Image 1 (cartoon, rainbow, N blue to C red):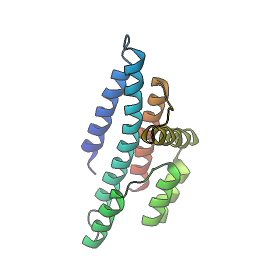
Image 2 (cartoon, helix red, strand yellow; image 1 turned 30 degrees about the vertical axis):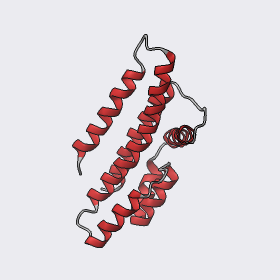
Image 3 (tube, rainbow, N blue to C red; image 1 turned 90 degrees about the horizontal axis):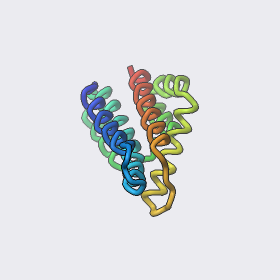
Length: 152
């Protein structure tokens, strides 16, 4: 598994969150950075899922690898229910392990993050602060760790 790639992605996202939390930053810029951070938390989660699954199944037949690449290109809101469904489709044990180990608070945080992201993407006025963004980041980190555990 490309652990380095996952760590690099989270480190980059953490830098953005730190910038959004900078003391003395005017509210408008902080708000923009938090919105960007929310979008990136979701995008990062989606990419990490793709990395983990594709690396885990790297020895699968070529057709399956091609299917996975196409599947991940279509874009999905990967809240925990969608992650569970994906893992179940690939290996029911993976789905069960993930479902049994994920915390409700992380599920709720990721659902909220996607709700805010979708609002932002469709021109809605939903906003968030640094505390919520940090909560979303932490939940995504926990979820990625649980996915890694589930697919071992």
